[in-house]
Length: 246
Image (cartoon, rainbow, N blue to C red; front, side, top):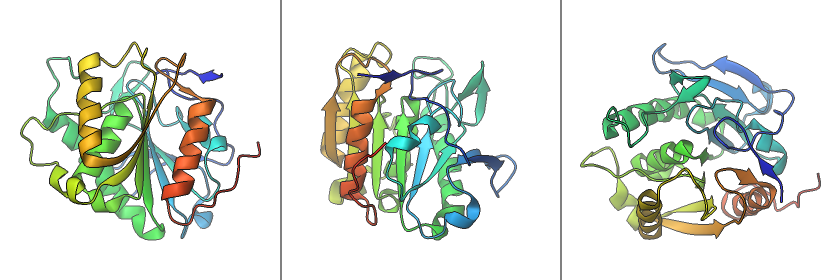
């Protein structure tokens, strides 16, 4: 079983050719830097898959998983807003004194605003987040549940609301979004109490597909990516069930 390791322990074989990095339209303070899997003239009408990397990684970090994803998707990998070390982060770690749910929601809202500016060109929007990126993806879903066809969370977690009105969790109870959650029970990075909270929350609020992997630790492996492919093929409209031929 192959593990793909990178800055944050995520999947990162070499990036797909033909991708381009460019700041998107919007205000200077909120427009993210994005790497695309397809040139602009090939994106219209396709389902969009937004990739959200982990703590101290960057927008190139998850592009190595493209070969495992259904070809119908246009993939956009977004850089987190805060430079930290050799990479970027979405918000302070939850155990840090600087952490607050307001910092989470500010980062999340910026990505939502960017998606709003481009989603008219796509048939649907799906989110995939690794580690802290799963917290961002799940928070985007919680704020605007009707906007997303599905969410994939890999080796990550969901944040508590801490009283914030940003999250529309009641809407998810009424109409849950398909959610794939993959992880290793021996993951040394995500604390047990955060996993317990995440498990309970996902069970109550989403159409959850949960898969455990052995020997993966805090990373992504080929078996998991095969399951992600199958999940996306089942739940996202317009995505065919073509088997992986690479």
